[in-house]
Image 1: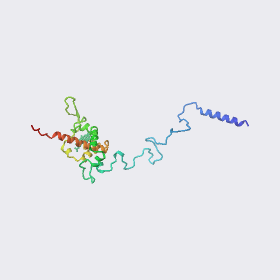
Image 2 (image 1 turned 45 degrees about the vertical axis):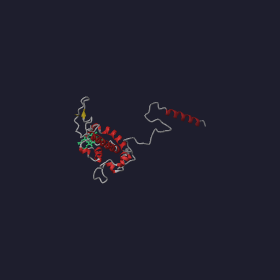
Image 3 (image 1 turned 180 degrees about the vertical axis):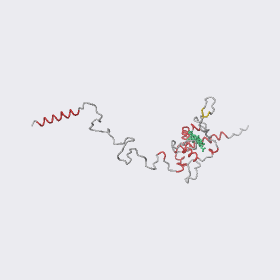
Image 4 (image 1 turned 30 degrees about the horizontal axis):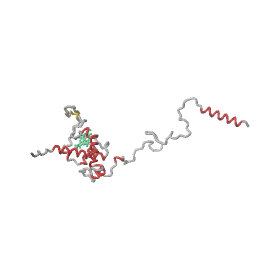
Length: 215
Ligand code: HEC
């Protein structure tokens, strides 16, 4: 009956020896509590037996729109009249109201214009931004950098252009001007339209000859 304790002792000794591998191992360490060591998740660009195309990265459901690109109001979304027969003439009231009034719109528009438009169109909209003109600090002439010429915003065609068309120009670009829709969210595009109008108005006042003060 001394066999049982002996067998137990040998078992323990063997177990202890087996635990000592005597060399480094590539295998993950044995953990009784695995915690977050292994996670039930997919790595990017990896394989999944679950989906029929075996891609772990899923394409968005057809018709999905990014949250900041979603707009209910078709006039605000496109700058077109509801029947799409032409451009809206003025910035949609619903947009101005939603944005908290024209003052807020213009403040935002000025800032966004400075980032997205002024580099080409110039801070005043004269079409002589730093992308277009190389300037000497002293004499300040516009030396062309070879960029295609830009119209000034005082061009009668742009002055009389419907606001919706200005918006569409930003969204889709026009001829040699690239589209800014992919970079500038809808609300900011309308804010820029507002600021372009403000720029035009401010310069019209300067351009109109003032009557001579009476002596
Ligand atoms: C990379 C330079 C560049 C930037 C940035 C740029 N534009 Fe332009 N834009 C142009 C060029 C070039 C034209 C002239 C296109 C033509 O007639 O071939 C133009 C033309 C225009 C016109 C006249 C369109 C017409 O029908 O003749 C408007 C309005 C305009 N841009 C507004 C904007 C606004 C607003 C922004 C800022 C969101 C902007 N642009 C940013 C290069 C630029």
